[in-house]
Image (cartoon, rainbow, N blue to C red; front, side, top):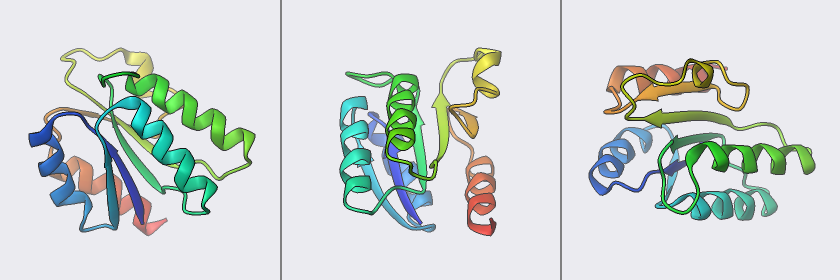
Length: 126
């Protein structure tokens, strides 16, 4: 599985990469614009990401907008949609985010190992 992690916090990145690398090749973007660019470049090279784990609050472009840009690119280029999971530190997330069509899943930070592995196993088994 090809994975893109969009996370600007170094400690969170280290923790998440230690989990994600067990499931495939993992690249990291440290801001929203870099995440969009990395996704587009990989897709144009025929190496689109299968799973994206995106922080909601990112420098340059927020995670929600990153996902919108990626979904538009997928549609325009007739690509199969990637599985997108949004992460946030919000204590009371917007209920609309949890069932929003842009995202496949939603995780609260700090991300719990069991929750992330459950999502990853679902992808691997489908």
